[in-house]
Amino acid sequence: MEPRLLNGSLNSSLNKVLRDRSEIASRWPETEDLTLKMLRPFYAEVAHEMFCPAQMTRNAFFARVLGHADDDFTTGHSYMRFAL
Picture (cartoon, rainbow, N blue to C red):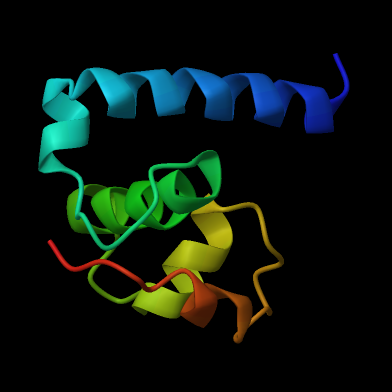
């Protein structure tokens, strides 16, 4: 399946979850849309809290777990949207 079509299908499923006010949706910040795009920063933040080595910066860890180059020092900042 083409990624664009898959994203649309998964976003539709997330919208159904949001409409049904599931446990996940009820805990999601009201100021943020519940979309696949918003799950990436959430995933990065959770992974950072659970698995980041002490000597690695948040930005470098985000780049690594989100599949960006190890020397990409700017992209990780755009994913820093949540705090646990």
